[in-house]
Length: 376
Image 1 (cartoon, rainbow, N blue to C red):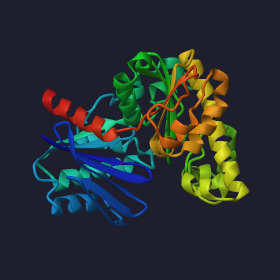
Image 2 (cartoon, helix red, strand yellow; image 1 turned 60 degrees about the vertical axis):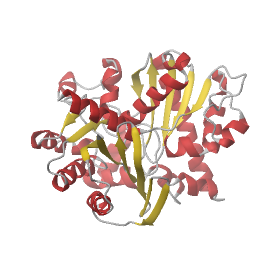
Image 3 (cartoon, rainbow, N blue to C red; image 1 turned 180 degrees about the horizontal axis):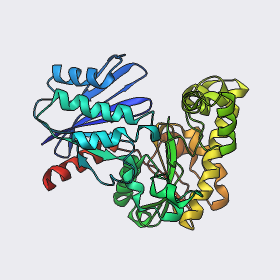
Image 4 (cartoon, helix red, strand yellow; image 1 turned 45 degrees about the vertical axis):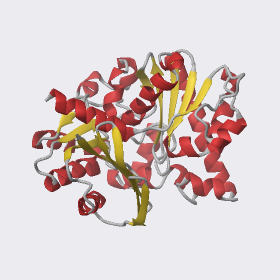
């Protein structure tokens, strides 16, 4: 059974094809460039399109990669309180997901549009939707509730958490690579253009840094992260009460970009000699360590730290700075292993295991889709 996966992020589109459990194709669209690998060969080409998903589906069809596709799996960022497990896409389901666009405006429209585009291109192929929020459905009410009147919780205004497919991937990998800590207390650090932490205890999510929307929590590439509500009210007044203007500011012009005034890309900031770049990098690392304290409190301890995401997997300097700020917990890196990006990053004398654990959301999507097709 061939399953095509589509993963539309805030800065990238990732895609893959699986024949059973074997990956036959993988690729990304990032910075207006498509990269793909299949059958031992790699391909790169410029790829700037107003409709990247539609253009990608045509690109795949032209090269025969859609032949034999039995299902298409889609990452959907927000499932609300209704969708806590993968489901088949139907017009009613997609309409319900449209209603959640205000809670994830950077991702949800693209996610739903991708499902509709794939349905149009492959009308006889089932479309399976997998939700980032589902992984965090195990969080206790005390973690999910805000200090608002109870009626708002009942109306869906609560902490959902995101990056769930990435965290699920890391949690599954830990069960294989480090079973002695996988059932313990693991701080999962998914650091990329979007960034969040998750407290994993006994294999399930008990806390996370993102909330009602993916704007909450850590400083990100262009997202501000957690703010005093009074600051949001101030920005609304400055914008003459225009929420769309404030939303654009908080989603596209803050974070690393806003703090540095240079770039929202960590690679650019690490390479820059500007003091503003150094300040933005320090702010990012500080916020990761600060929020890590909250996650560790929710777990009541710490056995392991796992880094994933574009920054977490590929920026040794950031891993080193974050771990240095957690040294008081007994976290100690092996500098040689860290520089090499080894699977185990911690020094032999570290009281806490530190891992580089690349997320594989596509494999989670494909496995979930096979399960849905078998079930239905």
